[in-house]
Amino acid sequence: MRALEECTVEIIYHGHSCIQIVTEGKSLLFDPFLRGNPLAVTKAEDIRADYILLTHAHTDHILDAEPIARASDATIVATFELAMYMSARKKLKTIDMNIGGTVDLGFAKAKMIQAFHSSGIFLEDDQIIYGGMPAGYIVQTEGLTLLHAGDTALFSDMKMIGDRHPIDIAFLPIGDHYTMGPDDALQAAEWFGAKLVIPVHYNSFPPIRQDAEAFARCLDAQGQRGYVLAPGEKLEVTASSLQRLTARDGK
Image (cartoon, rainbow, N blue to C red; front, side, top):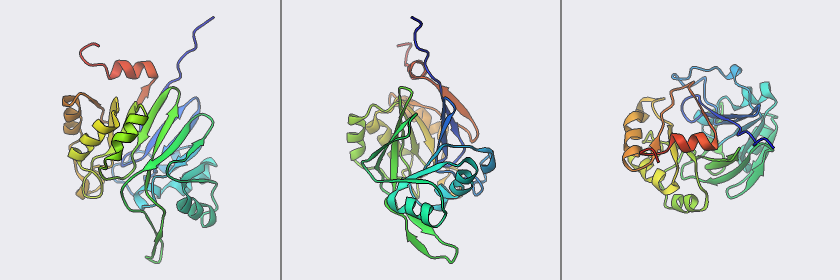
């Protein structure tokens, strides 16, 4: 019998916190924010997704969810309140869930985990309505476990999450001001126990300017692997290639 071939997982960073995960012709998209991001090199109309996972309701995480969902006939996954907003007001397909729950998307499973942040929907009349609690996701697909922390501060239960889930790749905010800064993100990386850490949520606006390469070097110094992706850049991994990518000293 021929050994089963590993399926490649393609990770595409679209800037800010927008990550796309593509495998076997299926696509997950986190927090699409392209039109408002001066560093984005991809247009919303060029992205297709099967599912759009939203961590919270701030504009810089949901701005392009509606046009991409309509063009792709994609389903939005979010906390109950945000999913209801997208369903009732925007007439989009949604899966509502909440922190601690898991949804089976067929080619991937997504578990919603806690984040410490805020979440509100800005309406055209300058009113703000409650957007539900902020969250992150743990996604399992093709033998890999990926964590998108969402917008969050450092909190001690990250260690519990890391102890219970072997995280292969973590997407962690480093921008400071609105989320963790690099120092707290280093602690989060350690507590999550991630094999590979990709920084997100930085440089899009002046208050969140950071040196991602310096952050990656600090990760290497503490025994973890940092990997910086520019907006539009891709990283292709399998379970075995990730092991080689994160090996230290040839081990």
